[in-house]
Amino acid sequence: MTDTLSTLKHIYETILNKVDAGIHAVDETGKTIIYNEKMTKMELMDEQDVLHKNLLDVFMFKENQQSTLVQALQKEKKRLTSSKRISTIKDKKSRRLIIPSLF
Image 1 (cartoon, rainbow, N blue to C red):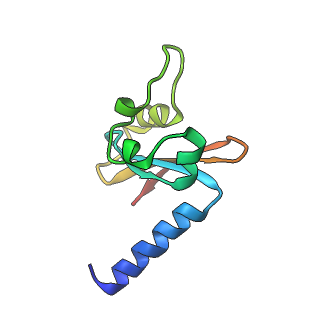
Image 2: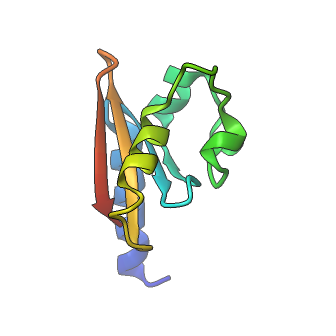
Image 3: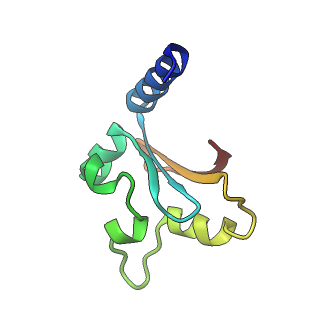
C-alpha cells in the first residue's frame, strides 16, 4: 500500500471510529463491510463477530421484526449494481439513516 493510501485509510478509520454515531454498512450480499466502535457499544457486539459476516448469520430477527439494513437490502436490491453498498447510521437518539452509496 502506498504512503498516500495508507494515510487515507488511517484517516478514514479514525473518522469512522470517532463519530458519535453507530455505523453499520453491508455490501449488496448482506456482508458487513463497516462496523464502527460506536455501533459495537450500541449493539453490545464485538467487531470480529460481525465484520465480514452476513447480516442474517449474525443477527437473529423475530418473525415480525425487521432490520433496517435487511429492509434496505430488499427494497434497493433491484436498483443496486455490484459496486454499490448500503449503510445505516444510528445516532444517540436511535435515529437510523439508510444510505445507498458508492465505496
